[in-house]
Structures are given as structure tokens and as C-alpha cells.
Amino acid sequence: MAVIPVETPGGRYEVRIAPGLLADAATHCLPLLRKREVAVVTDANVARAWRGPVEASFAAAGIATHWLELPPGEATKNWIQLGAVLDWLLARGVERGDPVVALGGGMIGDLTGLAAALLKRGCKFIQLPTTLLAQVDSSVGGKTAVNTGAGKNLVGAFHQPVLVLADPLALDTLPRRELAAGYAEVVKYGVLGDADFFAWCEANGAALLAGDPAARERAVATSVSAKAAIVAADERETRDVRALLNLGHTFGHALEAETGFGAALLHGEGVALGMVLAARYSARTGLMAGAEAERIAAHLAGSGLPTELAALGLGADGAALVAHMLHDKKMDAGTLPFVLLRGIGEAFVSREVELADVAAFLDGELASPA
Ligand SMILES: NC(=O)c1ccc[n+]([C@@H]2O[C@H](COP(=O)([O-])OP(=O)(O)OC[C@H]3O[C@@H](n4cnc5c(N)ncnc54)[C@H](O)[C@@H]3O)[C@@H](O)[C@H]2O)c1
Ligand SMILES: [Zn+2]
Image (cartoon, rainbow, N blue to C red; front, side):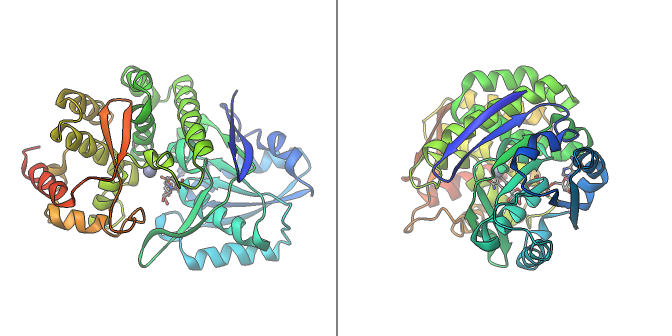
């Protein structure tokens, strides 16, 4: 089992990574429980695959589980469901010291985490992430949120979990497209700060996607270590350290917004294409070699991820995509920090990017034959 400690001002906890952790969840959660019962929030897809093993594990330890199964999908991450989760937890008599368990992907983790942040001004919560994206990214670091009509993740809180259990076997039931989307965030850690890990991804990504549990465990552990180091240095993104995790996300969010934040382009797919755009933009401005940018594109494309803007068939031009960026919550006094690259493994935050130049660059990418 890999154990990655996360140390932030908001809390110290462990991310434990090993095959079989879900079926053995009770063993790991027991020391944190004060009662013989625990509340679990999940979605219906995850429940179908994983409620059985988790419930059995707690039952064998003499712990009753209470289940709230929400509708799957990003649309559930809203005010109404947040209120429903809170009412349900209050009706179960959950107290501050009782950890609430979030079993699911980033949608369930973000929603349940925010409910935990608000319940009685903050109760404990445990993350059992079941998507690759949640295991390498959203379950670690304490960002919680819901979406509103004005945009994604605009209302939230920093609230760290008390424990994260990442089970590579959970990914066996994940749809292939969701797996690849989460893999984009794995590659991101290599591209932003670890050229050796990027090379490891090139060599082992196909095995990981095909189901190799050792490759999955290694990728999750390396990714979580990278995120833990960044979050420890800059929990609340007040310096330009945590902002590095937004590599590919400024471009990606614009593409997600343009395509309606839905099945047309999953978040990780937007990040993959966004990372390629950040790399190509960096090459265009002379920061990195074009061949390095294309090396990133080749690996992501080979992993089944979108890397060509023209192939999306958007009706928008570069200016329209940049207009989406202006709604980014990272907008700061009229400037938008961009994560650019000096090479693979060498990301940095630039506040000098001209949005008109980005629009012109995107027009070129939109026009280039895929
Ligand atoms: N808090 C953060 O730091 C952070 C970081 C990145 C993303 N996010 C958020 O995470 C969310 C996206 O997370 P996601 O990609 O995990 O999406 P998700 O939670 O919606 O899961 C994707 C789909 O897979 C299904 N699923 C999940 N686990 C499964 C399993 N093991 N087997 C079968 N099906 C399974 C879900 O029901 C859903 O249909 C977004 O809301 C995003 O804003 C948060
Ligand atoms: Zn992301």
C-alpha cells in the first residue's frame, strides 16, 4: 500500500492507495468513527458497482451504513442537491465529529465535501474516490464546490478530508472514456513538473488504461504526491504555486463552456486539449520547442484524448473562446494568469499573456487541418 501524507494548514491526513481498499474500507475508517453507524453519500452508478463491497466491509465490522444515492452526472452538483444532502445528514443526526463518507467521483466528492464544510460549521469527511480523476485530483487538496447558473464551481469552500482511500480496482467498472479523461490529469503532473514521470506515462500509459493495477497504483501515487507537495506549499492558491495545477484548464474551461459542460467534451478531455494548446501557445511565443509540444500531443492522442481544436467542429472563433476565459474565477483585477511551459516538466505562471494574441493563436488552431 502506498501512503501519501498531505499536510496543509487546514488539516493533515493520509491518502492510502492499494487494490482492495474499498472492500476493506471499514478497517481504515474505523479509527475515525465514534458511533456504530456512518452516513455514505454516493451516486446511483457508483452504488450499483461498489455499494455492496463497502456496505459488507462496514457490516462485518459491526457498523451500520446509511446511504444517500444521488442521480449521476454533473447536473447533480447544485444548490438543490446540496440542501438535500445537508437535510439528510441532519436527519441522520450526524455531528461534527462524525465523518461523512463520499463514495464516488469528483461530483460526489465536491458536493459532499461542501456539505461537510457547512454542516454544523464543519464536520469531518472521508473521500473514497472511484474515478481516476477523483483519485489523482479532486479527492486531494480540499477544494469543494457546487455549480450555479453563473458557472462551474463558483460557490465552494476549502475543507480538507480526514482520510482518502484510493482503490485502483474501483477503476475496473469505470467507463473507458471516463478513465481516459482522468488520465489527462495524470499526464498533467508530468507535463507541469516532472519530465521523468511524463516519460513513464509514455511508456506505461497504455498498460494503465488497459487495466494494469500496478501501473494504476504507481500513477495515482505519483500524482497524489505531486499534488500533496503543491497543496502543502499553497493550500488556498494565494501564491502562484497551486495555480500550476491549472495547466491546460484555462483553455480547457473555455472549450467546456463552449460545448456546454456536457458529454460533448468531458472535463479531462478539455484539459488534454487545453494542455496541448498551452504547449503550442508556449512554442509559438518561443518559450519551448515545437517538437516538445507535439510530443505532449502525441502521447495524449495515443491515449484516446482530443488534441486538435479544429476536430471539435466548434462554431466559435478565437475571440469567442477568449470571452469564456474572462468569466474564469482565476480572473484577477483584469488579468488572467496562464500556465505556460518552458519545456516538459517546466510549467510556470505568466501574467503577461495578451488575450488578443491568444485569440489569434486560437483562430489559427481552429483553422488548421486536424
Ligand atoms: N475539488 C477539486 O479539486 C476538483 C478537481 C478536479 C475536478 N473536480 C470536479 O470533479 C468533477 C468531475 O469528477 P469526475 O470526472 O470523477 O466525474 P463524476 O463524479 O461525475 O463521475 C463520472 C461518471 O462516472 C461514474 N462513476 C464514477 N465512479 C465509477 C465507477 N467506479 N464505476 C462506474 N461508474 C463510475 C459516475 O456515476 C459518473 O457518471 C467535476 O465536478 C469537477 O468540477 C474537482
Ligand atoms: Zn481538472
